[in-house]
Length: 611
Image (cartoon, rainbow, N blue to C red):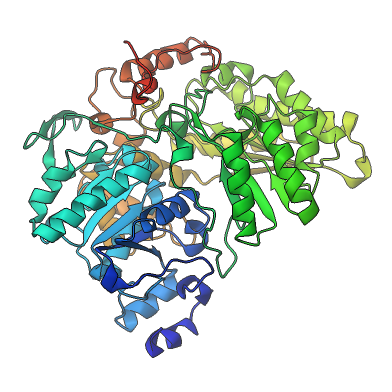
């Protein structure tokens, strides 16, 4: 650490964010590696270090002796101000070296509101923000993550996108970069060769054309690049790297515990859920693998809590066997086990007893909609009876804190559906009164709502988002309908959701908007401390674009979407059928009951898939 940096750190909040030197970090000799990679997370240290994907890919890349992958996070405003004042470039935590000197800068994009931070981090590193302005092969700027299944809004800034799961795909990209660097290829030759790697999208090889009404007319594919880029998956999860010696942070982070990934994908098919479609098909770790890795991770970190992670933890086949095996090892060591992502329709007494053996925490269920009619529309497949039964089990087991999550603005939602949320919360309160083992402790029920955001690659990708004014009207309706003081109501700010919807379904023209926001001071837009709705609206106006065109417009059935060049394995025709089923109020059984032929199984080498 340089004397100048030492002086800076005395003047900023949480200096441990910027020092490195954590237990289990990986340090290599830069003279003995072929490539140096800066793994950049466009949010704060506390958020990035809580991300399991970062820990997996960091370890997977560093398994190659020829690659040194280091971490870099977005600085908070005070640190950014100090870096710019002292003319210090953004640096990697392991070495302290400027990331602009690295061979590759890799961004993890899991949330659209992080886009401005990508530009800000590149600028802090002294790297031109636009791909066209970076003429040399290195530093190569590439990105992966869930948001990349619509890469177009960030196409002007990223050299290539890794679509899908990165354990193998990232290594193939870096192997090609090694070869290109060794043989002195120009950047254009490398990008064309990279486009032949399955799962790689190179924006410069695709040129969109637009109709007079602003919709997409066609995408011209250049130089023989693939017409469609299909996401990559890892078929056998037990066969790839899993972090058992993850970095132990030097300061408190959001999820300060061991995270154990059970499986990828989801069998449920909720029609609003992008992750549920983006991560299909379901692939699971074996119970034996999980028990072994959990013990190694706990022993190697000193953590006193482990959480089981997936899109729907309680759907894991063999969960009882796994939790029993974990508790047998964890209980004597006073290590607690937590199970987020529990389904309201399969929370059992046995599961409850396992969860609370060491330490009892609050419970969270996500009915998403208040009425059964609307839950059928979104294919939630959770009945009121099942939810109340799960609440009964929890209250009989001594729980007194419960959170319920819902969305407002779902397709076909009416005022009756909104009021049904208040009615359901009252029924949960009544359930507590009838079943609580210790009513003297009281109860705290929290109802939270967020604004529905239509997402690409879901059956609702055609839908319009309700206006900010309409969302707030429904919030007021619900707030006034909740009478009990035992029920607390929180709602998510709708202005952020409007921008998120515009970015998630945006096209390449939104690059100008993102750059306008950044040049006007935007960064860390997922934080209320920094987000400015006015700044975003000014940026749209300056670019001659309307956010409602992207967020609040029902798309035509035959409209070509900016993200149609990307395939997540689920056919657009299947999504259209699911949309039709939603408007008919028909539910689709989950994948364990019957395969509905969405197409995702085609991604598995061992299975055939017919139209």
